[in-house]
Length: 347
Image (tube, rainbow, N blue to C red; front, side, top):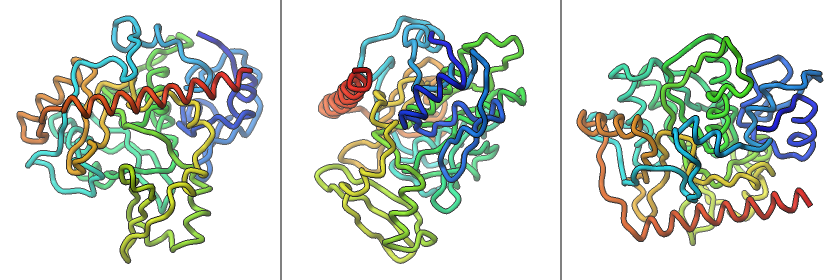
């Protein structure tokens, strides 16, 4: 594992505009703050080895070490990461309705885990206006308030840092690939702190192609509609090529080509489409908007899914071979694009 501190993190990530605002460096010291969806280094620090550097998903990941720590096995050269099986899923009859982006699988699993005591709280991402706000929720009702996709980058991992500092345990965490890579790094206790407490019980990863720079999307949308009326956003599958903004007055379709210019540079070097460092990974199911794709990666994740199905919180179905081909192609292409850009950065 590479080691470094504030100086190295600033040189390798912030000066190259590669921060994805995951929050892995926030909440462990006073030197990093978040303002309007952006992580900002506010003071210099002379530590030669810092958790800010060790936990950042952009400073270089020791995949072998992380896989041994997370999955207790060697790292698998599979574009979808380590997994047991892939199914389709949606919320069951015992889940109260919510503003689900697709099948409501994540809300169903977290609600079930809270109700049956599997976890004491869940790290989720809510919004204030259009600004993502991570929080710990402790009841199923608040889970549903956080449902739906947030397309702006969020510092969700910072809440895991804060929970660890407070000695909290038994939390479920929902996050995107970069966020959960940071969480996996935190849980590995990279600097071998003797007072470290792992606050996490299990994680659910969200498929992610890219996020949007919060400040840029706020400015962009403010010139086209009233941000206060926005109730949700969506990106329909190809060949639509539009970004759908849902408001109290209906919905507006904006050119996806314009919206893509608002993607942070850090997303371009992320190789992970399906959130590999998770117990379960969830994404849209192509062709059926009321269902999700569910990747079961660990025994703990499979046990939670089976219990949720038995309790009427989740419904499963088979994942078609054709869909697996499409998912594998998409994940592979993201890795290739990221690797190409990383090689250009090095040269």
